[in-house]
Length: 254
Image (cartoon, rainbow, N blue to C red):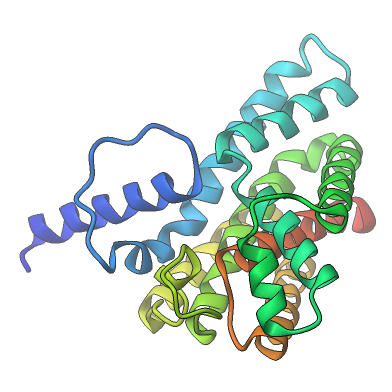
């Protein structure tokens, strides 16, 4: 593969990552069977762009509105730009593990598009927690923690998809990347994420990085124990937990 082909392939992979994780319009892309698994290394790049958009929105909003209203606007932006992808995963995962007592029952609930009491509660708590934390982040560190959070929460899909297989044999979103992310993709995505967070937070970077690793490891262990692998909803749930945890680091430490 020559340099031009390599650049084109990289551009296509970046486009696939944005197409999968956001509702940002993308040009028509050549999609292959392994396109998404190759694109996982660029998931943190998506987080950087989404987080940067929120920072810009916050800076403009503060010129005219109170912090609480700006926090609400930023939260609505996150929901809209991702099309509730991760919120849906969190709600379905809460319903599955809250209402299921066996692997088969959990997977059956995860496939059900209806939201139950566990899912509704998890969704409300997630939105409430993010709103309160966004409104409480120190203004001078808001940009750093927003960007770091959205880079790290997208990064969480890399170790999960590298170490864990798909929980079900049927093809699904999770099955497109589970156990299919390569070691080079894991390394590239991890190095990029660490670099961005280190630049953004400097001496305060250790806590968010450690928290993100712990959440990915513990949730991965839980999914492996209960399901023998992961589903697309599991990726979304871990993403949401990581986002909240990094915001919490900003509020707790500073």
